[in-house]
Length: 239
Image 1 (spheres, helix red, strand yellow):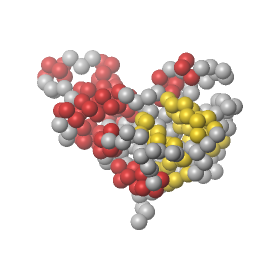
Image 2 (cartoon, one colour):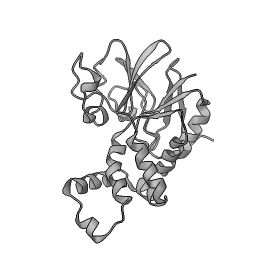
Image 3 (cartoon, one colour):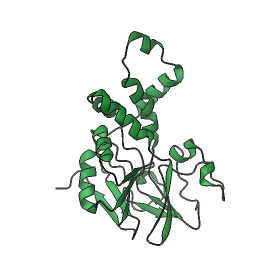
Image 4 (cartoon, one colour):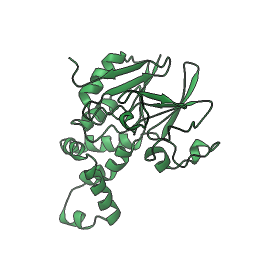
């Protein structure tokens, strides 16, 4: 029984399936997904539907799921002149922000689903957790999408806000905890200053950053097995 973690799939369904093959995921294993399943890549809803079929998957919410929720709820309603006229400014601003951040594939695939499946998808996203605390291989891990914004030593994880956990980027030059590692996505490792291996899993100061930019040119989808720290990668140009 092993514990694996993947982050920021961003609709790359084929890469995700290849990663499942690469890690040889078994029914007794647990797979943690650190958010940002949707948007950007070609098949975000297809990835969501696959995750919904996998009882050994524990999804954690990312900022793209938060942006998508209001949009998906709106698309799941009957769109009339009245419903459009009654959109409040906050919802409209959220939809505009989502559209600027790669929503098109998610919207397109969501529209293709029947009404019952649409609601099941929304309900599934609403069940995503904020974070997970895991023990594996004799180590303790905090799994979270982004980081710990407004970090204060000794602050309980329950006291961090949704924004702190899902939007605020990790500070990789700060060690958050002495007794556990923080595994996160959100920031592609290509963008971490001083990273000697851009595009591969980054480890420093108790951080393990695993978003390797799979939806960008030259990026890859990464996974880590917490039990022994082994890293796994799949890339688009593999044969």
